[in-house]
Structure formats: C-alpha cells, structure tokens
Image 1 (cartoon, protein in one colour):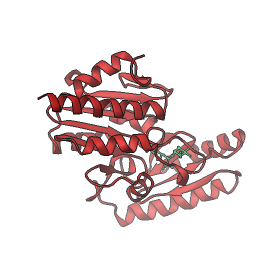
Image 2 (image 1 turned 60 degrees about the horizontal axis):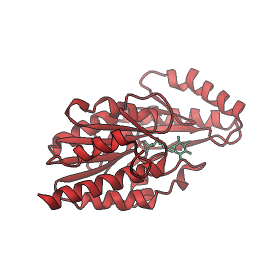
Image 3 (image 1 turned 45 degrees about the vertical axis):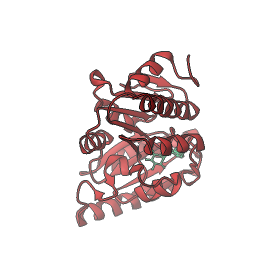
Image 4 (image 1 turned 30 degrees about the vertical axis):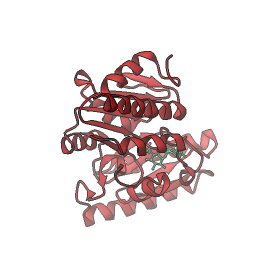
Amino acid sequence: MSHNGIPSDLAGALDVAARVPRLLLSSDYDGCISPLVSRPEDAVPNPASITAIVAAAGLPDTVTAVVSGRELAVLAQLSGLTPPVHLIGSHGSEFDTGFVAEITDEHRSLLERLIAELRSIAADYQGSMVETKPASTVIHVRNAARADADAALERTRSGPATWPGVQVTEGKEVIELAVIETSKGHALDLMRERFAADAVIYLGDDVTDEKAFAHLRTANGDIGIKVGDGDTVAGFRITDTHDVAGVLEFVVAARQGWLASR
Ligand SMILES: O=P(O)(O)OC[C@H]1O[C@H](O[C@H]2O[C@H](CO)[C@@H](O)[C@H](O)[C@H]2O)[C@H](O)[C@@H](O)[C@@H]1O
C-alpha cells in the first residue's frame, strides 16, 4: 500500500494519468461517492469525495463527471454537485440536455405496465419496494428477509424481465427494468470525444459499471478502478468509499503539482 489505502501500482498509474494534457476524472455515485444504505433516498455523499471532485473540476484542462444509475434530478439533489462538474444519470443515458434516445409514448406505456407489475410483486414481500425513474423502474430487496428477497427477484426475472423491449440490469439487491438501452460506456465515449480527453479515470462498484470499464482504453493510459468485491474487467481494485476519496484526493494533488511545475 502507498497513499490512503491506494495500492502502489495504482498510485503509479494515477501519477501518470494526472500529467496528461486533458484529463477526464469520473466516478459512479452509489457505492463509490456514497456508501450503500438501506433507503436510496438516504445516500449521502462522502464530503471528502465531493471536495476532491469540485477541486479537480476547478483545475485547468480537467473535466469531472459522475455517471450514475440514478435519475439525473435525484443525482443532482443527493450529490449537491453543480457545473462545472458533469452529472450523467440513468446509467449513462440522461445528460443535462436530455436523454440520448427518445422516450416515446410506447416506451412510457411499457414503463407504466412494468411499474404496476413490480409494485404487485413488491406488495407480496415485506421490505421490498419499487423505485421509479423516467426510463426505468427498480425493485429493491435490501430490506427484505433473504428468502423474501430471493423470491421477489426470481419473480421479477421470470416475469416482467422477460417482456419484449425490456432491458434488464441486475445490481446490488436490485433488479432494474428499463425501456431504453443504457450504457455508462457510451456515456464515457461521448465525454471523451466532447472534451478531447487524453486519459479517462473511472471508479465503479456495480455490474452496470462494467460497461464503463469495458470502454476504457487502458493501453492509452485510461484507468478503471473497481470498488469492493465482485468480478470485474477493471485493472485496479480498492476496498470502499474511503478509498474512493483517497484516489480522488491523490489525483487532485498529483495534477496540481504537475500543473504548478510546468
Ligand atoms: O450507478 P450508481 O450511482 O451506483 O446507481 C446504482 C443504483 O443505486 C441505487 O441503488 C443502490 O444504492 C442504494 C442506496 O445505497 C441501495 O439501497 C441499493 O440496494 C443499491 O442497489 C439506486 O437506488 C438505483 O436507482 C441505482 O440504479
């Protein structure tokens, strides 16, 4: 280990990435900037991570982004982050300019049926609940007894998750059913191109973040950092949200030092 729980190989890679002409520093929200909690509406960000992201956004030629599964408005409210930090919601499909794909009446009608079906499933399993977003709905089972949680998830998998036109994402004690395709990887591609970033750093903890890791160009200096356990294609791993703050602070300090020395 070297700095703040950051493995030394990761610290070395971050030190190189911090010296590129144009850097995109990006992260997932839940499980990275905020610890996972029982109630989604209580997901408060780690203040150290917020301070570091805001500091990075104020540096020359440094773009910052939070790419979340959350609805954009909720992400903005929970994180408290504002421009120049870029917020991208709905698993990479919802920008401040709107959704990357049009949400049609047909999509909205399918979404209404999905919400009704998930609510009917959740009603049968104490502790489960349904979250609604503009292009998707989520069944949450974190607060249900294990057997109830498993049964609710299985009914979702074998029921509404099989309906035509439904995009399924399994996450941490959740299954999300969307009516449009989403990809954090495409969101990173768009950001990279828009800001002509020479390197991209991305931190994520969940299955949905694997699409982001898969779009990184690690041979060119991009860095993917998996937070916590689980299979991943990311090149590096750290333990928890405290380490996320450590990584963000490390990048800010390294880039400030490099910028000052030029
Ligand atoms: O892409 P993210 O920013 O990580 O968002 C993914 C999902 O996060 C939320 O659910 C997760 O966090 C909750 C609060 O800590 C937790 O209770 C739940 O079990 C987790 O799965 C959010 O509610 C979802 O809408 C996001 O898609």
